[in-house]
Amino acid sequence: MTSLAPMPVAGVSSVVFFGTPEVAVEHLESLVASGIAVELVVTRPDVRRGRGSEVSASPVKIAAQKLGISVSHEVSDVLKIATQKPNLLGVVVAFGELIPIQVLSHVPMVNVHFSLLPRWRGAAPVERAILAGDEKTGVCIMRVVEKLDEGEVYVCQEMAISDEDDVNSLRSKLNNVAITLLLNKIKNGFDHGITQTGETIYAKKIKTADLQIDWSQPSNQILRQVRVGGAFTFVNGRRIKIMQGKLVTGVSRDFKSGQLCEISKTSCCVATGDGAVSIAEVQPEGKSAMPVEEWLKGARLNSGFLFGA
Image (cartoon, rainbow, N blue to C red; front, side):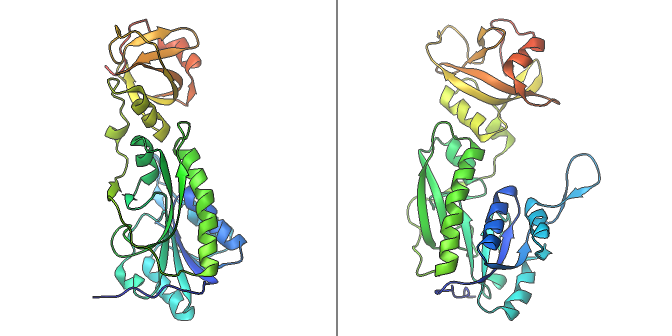
């Protein structure tokens, strides 16, 4: 059985950074700003976006190039650096790919994970915490091992989730905490971590089915979908995203779920399984996001109209 490379107990001054999306950029920039030498950035390959043939680099790649740091798309390239820098640490932030044991046996690595492990291991911990109605989440700095998010935890900080938090605001708060924790551990070293205990739950990637609104569900559950981003319904056979909404109470139970129960020039309330949701901002199919009052000018909805049909 292949063993993992030993963790640096006294701290390090050189790292290889693994990351891909925008959320990882601030970590990379903070490492550089704090005087830690980033020897290499490993990120996912450029991808084709939209209908054209042009490919786009990941946000981390763009940031690394601006900082003058070498970039690779091959995880194994870290081994070349390790031969020259024996006291090297790998730092993983939303990389999007498992690190093979052949690399972990030569280079110790830590991962920044946005949950209270072992709850919400996997790809979408922030989204899943909001959808599940969790009252708290947190940041864990853990060891990268061969299996997904199963490494020992070196430091963990809890954070409350407010009813106003959407994915972006919550991720931003978590990121700020994570950067402070990460820099402290890199500079001061990694002592013995703590084995994860408790119920293991996996945060599967968000799929389209997770975001289609079922108006028979409770209002709070529907608003969680909205807070995750991309929640949608159908109006006259066309998809429309609900970008913002708020809870409405005291609605008559005579309305069917999904039925338009209140409409004016500036407001639009839809009945749910236990009340109603007032829609504040929408994005019609093929258009930009707009305030609900602007959408209502051309929507031609009548009282009693049924959403989702």
